[in-house]
Image 1 (spheres, helix red, strand yellow):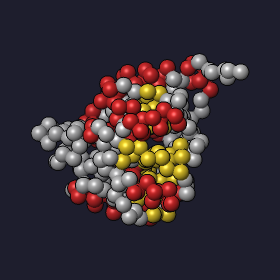
Image 2 (cartoon, one colour; image 1 turned 30 degrees about the vertical axis):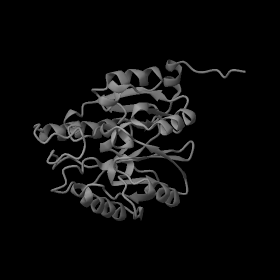
Image 3 (spheres, one colour; image 1 turned 180 degrees about the vertical axis):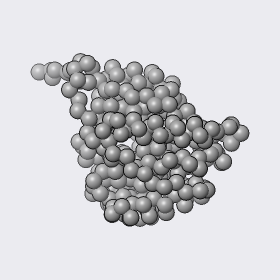
Length: 282
């Protein structure tokens, strides 16, 4: 017998958001001083004041939605520290620390480790290169970790994370340099459903995603280029880059509530909503 499927309107009405705790870092020293991804252009002007205002709006949105926002202090000389998701990957009260690919960002790992230790989290120091939630995400409903590799994170870090958390890790190979982190090409919508951009992945990884997530929301090239997959969802509300209007419409049709936020200045560094937001899972 075919299962009854709710309409998008019914789904939206019955979804209940979970309260989340997020770690963020104000872009006090934000700039594009070097180019380590295709979005960074050192010749393009950056409005640091506007970047701070956009970031504050993002933090306020989370608070208005009922979530807790914690802050790590920015450090001079670390212009990308605003992308707090890259500093660690946190599940079950354990912070698996980052080890950055590029030397420009490596000091961020120490700053994050210091914060997590001072806040009472258990910290697992990495042996292999990985960039935190940039390349890891967790689906509690499946007790499943999805992990990206190909540009930043060493694939050996996936096995390391599996040992740290005692969870199954599914490795996904990224092939488009514009989507250099998993969180630019895939995001969880709730405990067991995702949205993703298929063309960002190698054929084998794409096939794996199709099999694991037949009900996924599929993004197109325009959605991905607008950083429409670099979103944060609480299971109902999806905080998404305001530029990604097409992706927001798809999410609404799928029964979620899009909450657009303008992060145009922070996109110049190659990040948006999710890059600025580390989820702390107790």
